[in-house]
Length: 199
Image 1 (cartoon, rainbow, N blue to C red):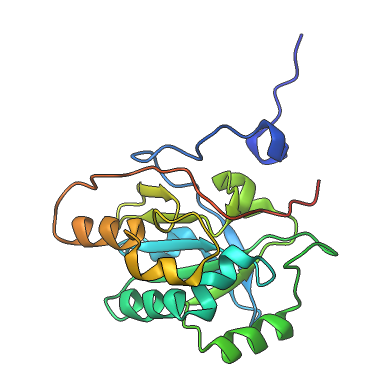
Image 2 (image 1 turned 90 degrees about the horizontal axis):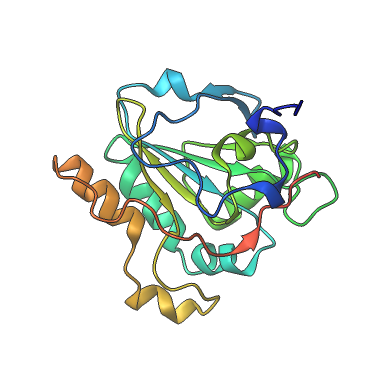
């Protein structure tokens, strides 16, 4: 008789090629942000939500922050009522692991503007979403359905210059959904540094 482990206990190696399937209900979660405030996905029902897996030390993530690309996206979409949650799932001692104070200092230094930055050192939220890389982007619609998961754009490099010519999948998904249209590309292979899971 085989013991079926709950999804949250699956190792990173056991994760499928793609994360949860677009069109399915996004898993609810509870997380604490860098200011000690608790957030639950369910409290944002009725709004679009972006989940952005982040890691300060990852050169792929740095590409989007050092160019101002991620900050611009955060401001652009939160101004339209989107809830933007950066999620930091690096385990203690791993690249990207930060204290709340360190994360707040980084957000200030980068002039970043997420709704909140959730600290997930145990990887609980990351495993629910089968997050693979930093960045790895998820878009959830007002009904709580996942409408996009995958790469932020189609340029899987660390070259800052690629930002200018990239097709931004995140923008395309939100623009289509908010216009009442279906999302043409709902799932792509995420690129970046691997999420630094605890085990």
